[in-house]
Image (cartoon, rainbow, N blue to C red):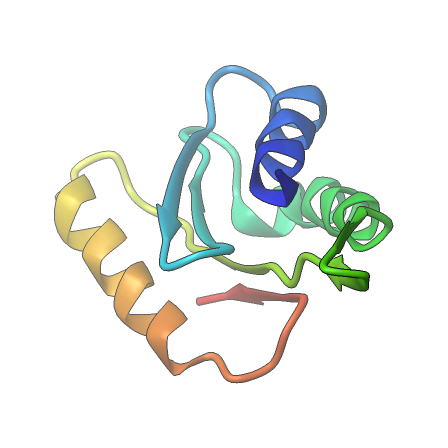
Length: 103
């Protein structure tokens, strides 16, 4: 249910032109054609702070969603599949939780 909440928050915070790739639980790549990662960074921070407030109770214990997000500036002529693959590879290296990385 927490991932459903995270997905709903994405729809509320980001515009329709963004591409979201979910990798392994709560790790995401965001591709935003025409918007630099640096420009999008405040929006992603707002999203992450909203996600941090989400919680559920499962088996009597509080469960919170930890989200890792990787963003990258991609040129029009880039191979989008290869770029997303590179972003996913980078996600595998992240050990911290609730992080935003621009690569």
